[in-house]
Amino acid sequence: MGLGVHARSGMERQRILLCPGQRRNEQKKEQDVTQAGNALNEYFGGNQFTTLSMDHHLENELLRITVQSTGAELKSLVKRETGQEYIWSGNPAVWASTAPVLFPIIGTLRDGKTRIEGREYAIPKHGIIRHNDQLELYSKREDRLVFRLCSSEETYAVYPYHFDFRITFRLRNEHLIVYHEVMNRDERPMLFHLGGHPAFRVPFFDGDTYEDYYLRFEHAEDSVSYRVTDAGTVSNRDTRPVPWTEGGKVLPLTHELFAHDALVFKDLESRSVNLESRNHGPVLKLDYAGWTHLGVWAKTNGDFVCLEPWIGLADAAEGDGEFAHKEGIISLEPNGVYEMSYDIKIL
Image (cartoon, rainbow, N blue to C red; front, side, top):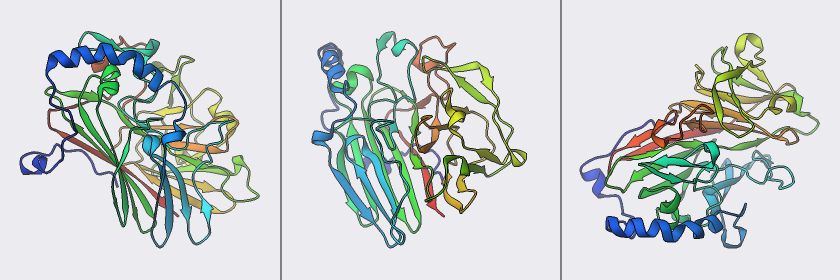
């Protein structure tokens, strides 16, 4: 149920509230970059900012969710009838995250840096939303929570664009729909990637093992996975086979599957995938229509699986370091609005 993409124009744009402090002159922008660089390294240096974070809750007749304001990270998705939790616990001894929001990059940069318009920038792994305690709860309605981050001196030091980023968590019957809105508040085209990273509990049912679970894809697949290097980049040339079964519709889950990091898919026919138990049947469905890539990842000692819809990839191992040359890069015109969503359906 992906929203797809479009750029709003005319009267629609006029209804969007601007971020504060966006009309600074170009000379001051350049001064701010230098002054804010050291502060940002400290700002993003830790793994979590729990002291300033708040949990926000939402429920309907079927589901209940909790979203942490730091990083606008989904921490809990519960089926009210059974009390069952669908989201990984975030055990810090294994992996402390639960559902990072990926913007404006996915994964890591080659050598930890990139070039934008002739200058080098060090954007943190997965971008500037994850672990960021500056997001605000912008709106809360009966069926949704909306979080917002506006560009600032700190973000501009590593990502030199003015933007307004909003993410909405909406409950509709048995669905949790996660909407993303990226608004370009700059005077030139803005480049970025976008992705989700939700981690789901596996095993889900008592008595099951990790190996009792599998992913069932919408269509038969024969894709290979593009290999993730030790540096976290993705090779454009080196692939590894995927252990498809049932004619390519099923991918069995094992811890060993992730011994060499994530599975990275560029050319799947499917636009949805189910997480299922051999003993109990379907658990949930992820609909990622409109997204260009899919990552599947877990820690080898983690009882979860991440189903990650992406537009874009981590830096290519063979890349030249230019941000504009990254695979799948989005270019958004000034005052444009980019929208994309994914849908988690409880089965």
